[in-house]
Length: 144
Image (tube, rainbow, N blue to C red; front, top):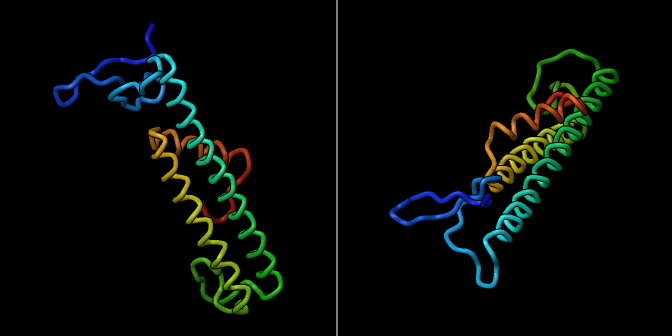
């Protein structure tokens, strides 16, 4: 069985990898069609691994944010108005800045992970399932 399926798009037959769905218009010179699948899958797997590593890092930052917020609430009290990212308005400026920086980093890492995942050609549903698996395994913290 071939690793590619042939489809007709724009009146030109193209090959799509069965495993990742990436379309290939032509096989590079000196390479067999069977070898092409391995090049595509290795590239997309590396990109997907990067996305997974970014997710793990994002949730680690989120847990750090939660722990720092707990420590700050124990030290400075759990009163005052809630502020997104820095938890409470009455915290000292350096604590609020650190909490805000961590929250922004969590958001950046999650966005970057999603972008990398989409670059690999995989479905967003799969990224969401992966995200849920990482959360159930490691925990997520306040953000994420």
